[in-house]
Amino acid sequence: MMKFLVDQMLGTLAKWLRLAGIDTYYATQKISDDELLEIAKKQNRIMITRDKELHMRAKKKDISTLFTKSISLSEQLHLVFQSYPTITNEINPLTRCSLCNTSIQPIEKEKIKGEVPNRVYKQNTKFWHCPTCNHIYWRGTHYEKILEKIKNLNQEYKSMT
Image (cartoon, rainbow, N blue to C red):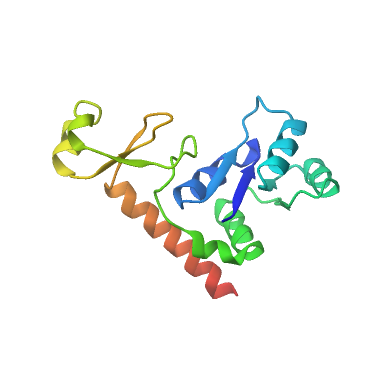
C-alpha cells in the first residue's frame, strides 16, 4: 500500500488523497525540511512537493519523491496517477479522516446525537468518526460529489494512458 508525504504547499492535494482513502501525511508549516525527510524515510512515504530544493534533497537521500510545478489539483492528481499507476487500485473513498489522516471508524448513531445538525441526524442511519480528532462523517450529498470527482479524475487519467 502506498503512503505519501505531501508538503505544506499541496494541502488540497493531501485532502483529496485522504478523501480517496490514500494514507497521506500532510506537512504543516511547523515542520522543517529535515524533519520531513526523516519522516518520509522512516515511514517509507513517497514525498510530493512543489519545492525543487526539497525534491533534490530527498532524491540524494534515496527517498521516493515526486515534484510538481502545477497549482492545479486535477493536474497534481493526474501526475500522481501517472507516476504511480497502481494507486488507482488502492482508492477506497471516505475511509480516512480528511483532517488528520486517521482511519475512520463506524459509530453508533445514538452516540453522536447533538454532535451533528438535527436534519443530518434524522436523514442518515450510518455515521463514522475519527478516533483521533473526533470529526464525524456521514454519506450526505458531499459524499456523492466526492465519489463523482474521484471517479472522473480516475477515468480522465485512464483515458490519457
